[in-house]
Length: 384
Image 1 (cartoon, rainbow, N blue to C red):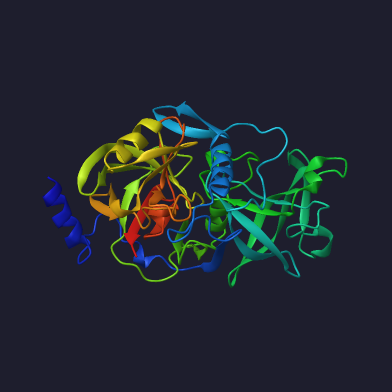
Image 2: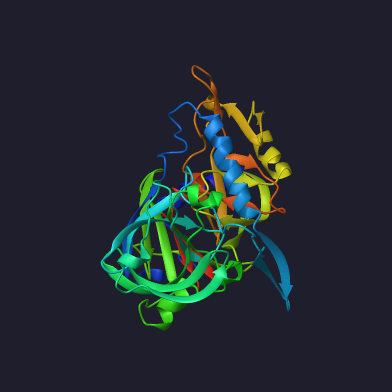
């Protein structure tokens, strides 16, 4: 089987068949560059910063702890767990963000991308850190004076994304001066998950934009240039890509889809894994048992602690995921060397207790363009 699979993998670089809907007809509405805050989390050519890896992993796991599974009729849906103090952390190290203009005249605000929530919210604190939105300086700002979360009111204003303007509804949060929250950075978060993960119950940005005719299609796409910059587009693709392979979302909430098989060096290791696509994760997270099976297929692998593993750099494993009938390779099979002069590299798969599901992050996604389709509740992938 391994030889047959390797033959097909080699062939895939010359030809990729078409499965599902072709998204090339989607009109581009707006595009904006995105950046990794703090720069690269990892680089296969560098010495691994395990302290930073552990901090970013902790932050990722915290985001995934904010939801639970519920059965709605015959469908499993992820719902938000009510938070008591704050919707999420803004300006965290390793997060992806875009520069936009909010209000009239436009005020430059950084908004963080969050694949685990669906709320668009802006927090204005007294801290000098971050990018503060002053509602009183915007001629178009409207407060509906309705609390949608603690210290957060339902608000309306204009948002310039790329070269397009949208009228957006969002939660504007102003923590009191006596609150520790006001020491946090100012900024914004745009949740790109499904509306079942909303904490505020405000209309989803994509729902509102589609209903008002601002978006021809309720889709967004993300394409990495490298592991510290990329492009986010609303309504279509940043540039032409043919023959995207689409698969349906299996559990509404996160962008969770089925990966039929996992291959290591052409050998079948895993089958039928449910993977949540999360462009903000610099790692691929998986249940401990699954991670161990994969590293056991790489000669010389050994655990590093806190879910991370290492292997001899000379092994250079070829890891592929099968999606919508085709195998896609990991862009990065290494997060960097364990330490200076070491012959061991840190692997991209990390053990995590996430109710049996995987999180498919940057080591895989840097090799593809990913299209997220709210209307068809599906995800499209195409090799770059």
